[in-house]
Image (tube, rainbow, N blue to C red; front, side, top):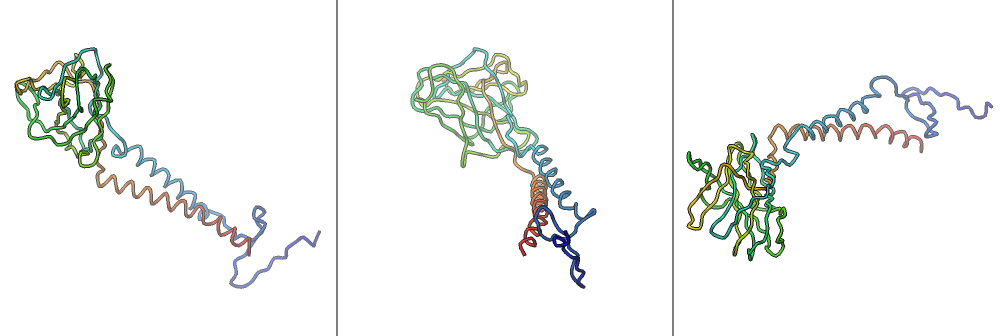
Length: 256
């Protein structure tokens, strides 16, 4: 039985070593609070990262306009465009997509959705002003005769940044023929209004109806959000490093 015992050796300047049954080698003794620092750092980093993920709206897409269908519809042409005003939240946002409930009808060519700035008229409500700020296109050949939801994606230079607490408007029109555009007969946004251009090019509005569809954006990260997220990622990386380091040291010493 004495043959299997390893005599303890105390050498000046050398740390005392004990057997590690898991690695079958020698490992430095580590007890007390300092040995728990890597685990604490790991969990702290994880908690900070989760807090950044779930508390920062800038990491998630937001729907700022959401109107269902109720069976009503209107017709849009290349000159008689149709759309609706919408407003952003308390932070600036990048425009991702606008989805509309459409049917082909007699439309030809392509369907275009344009986004405009607006101005307020005490009688009409919000009306478009200036030239198009961004646009997205859908091929009419891919639009069915039955009403369905179609998503217009704004990419590249058309993925514009929308200002906070600002009213904009989207307008839809085909390059040829007539397009069926669904609307809701009860406007869920009392501060917004349906916008149209009649066949003479004159604007009109309807505050009791709203165009059916969705507007999706991604909030622009604020400097404080970027700092919080970066700190969380850094803390998580440090925690992983120090958690793995003791294990690597044990394995290294076990092979010596």
